[in-house]
Image 1 (cartoon, rainbow, N blue to C red):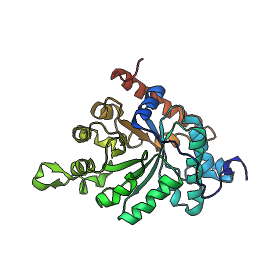
Image 2: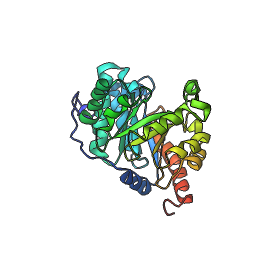
Image 3: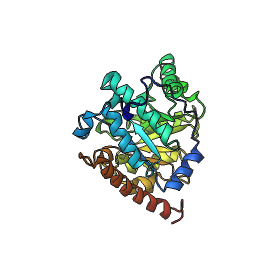
Image 4: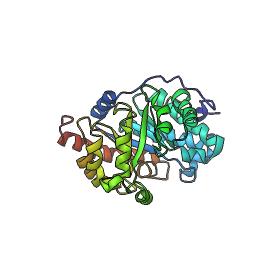
Length: 297
């Protein structure tokens, strides 16, 4: 097996570093970027020449990571894309996480798994991601309440990213429903209640870029928290609007772009094209940080 298969299946990573909110902000200032690259890797969409590799998914991810690591502060592999390929895909996921931890330890790694279940099940999910894989953060669905979230918060230094206001069309089915007298809607109640479970030193929230006008309402409840904001790029969310409504004194934003970066090209030059797309976003982010006096020009 070649270089792309260097990590064994079901690897237990030795990565023990934790990243605080202050350290994340320092990375943002140093790189002049609050970009998170989503590794939503679909074997049907990667360049054909990679299919000759021992592990095409890891080979693709490795090249994307090497090309973009200097331009972003976080990576977010989406578990569904790896689970869809069974044990082979899970092996590629674990190798990807281990590679980032080994080669780019300043990167904030988010496992986008949207877990959340009754307490003993959440305990097992937490053990998997925080003890075995040692990722920095995990996306969690909060709609089963406190006992589905608290097991993740037991891990000091690890982050829980709660789904708050998502960018999908069906979000309004539940997230915008009025609760108790109509003074707030369900996503606002989720935000408010979650503050009883943990602080902005361990809780982040998902807020879709296509809901940028709602960020003011989010910030009214969680002014200090970091927000993970998908939807810039392929979903046509506005980076300027996200920054206008969502920026705080420590930036407080991780803006995710996936398809627009990783599938920017389908030839042997795909990694260079991904870097160019990431650099375009990074330049816009640098301008925003300078304009808001969070970094110097």
